[in-house]
Every structure is written in C-alpha cells, then in structure tokens.
Length: 115
Image 1 (tube, rainbow, N blue to C red):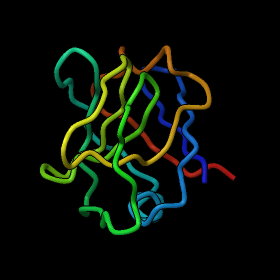
Image 2 (cartoon, helix red, strand yellow; image 1 turned 60 degrees about the horizontal axis):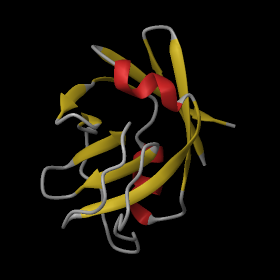
Image 3 (cartoon, one colour; image 1 turned 180 degrees about the horizontal axis):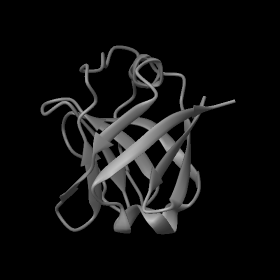
C-alpha cells in the first residue's frame, strides 16, 4: 500500500506496512485534512476515525521519514527528524520519496491512495 501526501505543490510518498492500523488509515483515503506542527521534528494530522493498534508494531526507533500513529491522542505523525521511541507510538510505514518536503507541510494537505 502506497499513499501520496500533497502540500504546497510538493508530493511525499509513503509505503505502508501491513498492520491493522495502516490498513484502517488506507481505508479512510482520500483525505483533505489540516496538518499541524508538533515539536521540532514532526507534522501531525488527525484521521476522521481512530486506528486500531492490534497487530501493529511499536515504532521502536522512529527516524526521519517514519510514518507513525500516536494512539493516546489519535494522530498520525510524519517525522522529518530522527525521534526514537515513545509509549503508544506505532509504526505505519516509511517514506519512499519526498522526505525533504515534510518539514514545510502546512495548511490543508491531501492524502491519496496510489496504485
């Protein structure tokens, strides 16, 4: 499963893993949704429906380009700097290309399924 995230005329592509949380996110696409800054290493958005984390691995060493789900808050996280791990952070996938655009994402982003 691959998804494209479009912001400010730039596209970032992620490959999702086969977890239940990734499959549920994929099923909610396409989305036009507000992206927010969080901390100094990530962008976040809140999918319409919370994701199930059963059969989903914890993100034990999130790096720049990791796509993750923070279950306590119900937000999807796009890291643009190395992060590490946190309780309740689950890995959804990794960036394939366009990682350099994550830090500058702003406003409303569009997220689409890719064939």
